[in-house]
Amino acid sequence: MRLRLPVVAVATLALVTPAVPAAAGPPAPSPLVFGTCPDDLAEPFPLLTCATLQVPVDYRQPSGATVPLLITKQAAKDPSKRLGALFVNPGGPGGSGTIAAGILAAPDETGFTPLQPAVLDAYDVIGFDPRGVRHSAAISCAEPTYFPTPQPDPDAAANRDTMWKLWDGYADRCGDKVGALLPHLGTDNVARDMDRIRAALGEQKLNYLGFSYGTYLGAVYTELFPQRVGRMILDGNIDPTPPDVFYQAAMAQSVAFQKRLGTYLAWVAKYDAVFHLGTTVRAVRANWDKTLDDFRTKPHGAVGGHELISTAAAVLTSEVAWIDFSQVLSAYVVNGDDTGLVEFATPSTSPRAEQFTASFSAVTCVDSKWPAGKARYERDAARLAKFSQFAWDNMWITGSACRNWPVPNHAPIKITGRGLPGILMFNTIGDPATPYAGALKLHKVLRSSVLVTERDSGKHCVFANDRADVNTWANDIGTKYLLTGELPQHDVSIPGHALPVPTPSALKKASEKSPVAAERWHTS
Picture 1 (cartoon, rainbow, N blue to C red):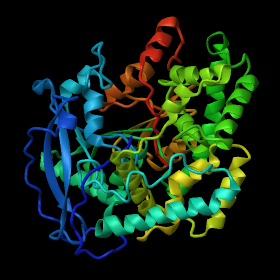
Picture 2: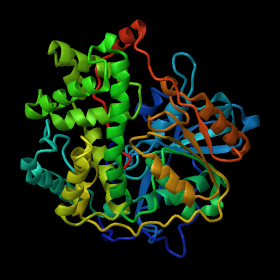
Picture 3: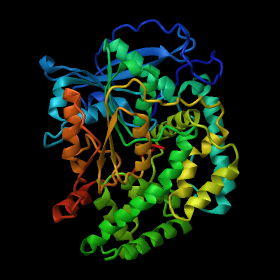
Picture 4: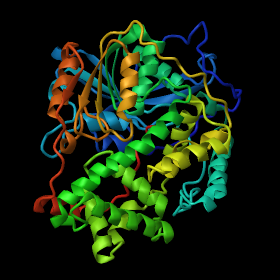
């Protein structure tokens, strides 16, 4: 999930901190008029229509400068069964909701849709690019090649000063390039934007499906607009309780990714006859460790330690690429052929990749408190690195820019869970990107919620997955709730989905794919 586009001109606004709404809010928005979508949406998703809504940059100045939001709609297929609009957010922050709406509603080559047909009959699926993302005045902080490829080894003590300068410089560039919009890119304002879209659609309630960071957006919405909450599904959940919410989330990820790596290595060992990387977890781990050390010691083209560990993290969020990744890892370990592994792990240097980094940083830095001194970051990363190969890399890419961010953070929204209807939550027990402990914390805060746990599973998110990762129990529970409002009577645990099997046909299909750099799903 990496994103993009032009910056709105709001240079006359002051750089201010909390985006608290004024007593007199903005006037009611005009109804949305949907029409043709931009080509990058229309071509893959021809059933989508698009509209633009102008929203206040600063909700304390509702008559001041505005920022345009692009909204997509796939209309309910059976108007006689229509229940309303279902908003979707894919996470990030920085993920494109316009694309997510298309993906969730589009059939694959077999006719399978992530959202079940009954949901698509009953709901207009609504996506929107949050402010600063893709078609909604996307921000950019630096040229696409600002970060070198390969990046310095994130674990090497000798590179610490270089890494701090790199991320401090990126933060400075965000202040210079984004300017007056930067203080207003937090989740509180995205939630307010979402309510403006609801009003412009003429919907009395907001029905919502949020994944990953989208669960935090959903939680903030429940606090700002509890009377407007309809049916809400939160999947892959973030603990919203600490004031340094995203710093704590990043720390928790480091441990969870290492644990998830163990699950992957055990799967590889099970298929030693296919991958030849070892019959035990210990043997496969030794081959992985040696490969990582090789790339750290001497990068292979654009791929060094950072690129390889980030790719591994992306692979671990789902099992979709396990066969592909294991094949190219095997080619390197067994035959010394690094071609596939380098192609797989080479990072994108496109403008959209940098724009994702910009919007991810802009939201997390203003949403959360962050340590001010380098010593705290380095001390915590060193502590976690005793247990996790992901610790240093995760520290650099999920928060080091925030230490020197050019605008102050907002006062975090305290989530109380008061006055809410029933909410449905999903989480896998071993999710590395949004660890299960965070789901338990959010579940406790949202007292009207029911938590569905996918046991024996470590993928990131449960409901409305693509066909390769689908959990039919989860889909049935979520679909019933969306159609009837009925929740399970209590928290439930459901069986895990099937893991991939590297059959000859699956191997052939994987080998025919063009290697694509795996992209880390930022959720911290």
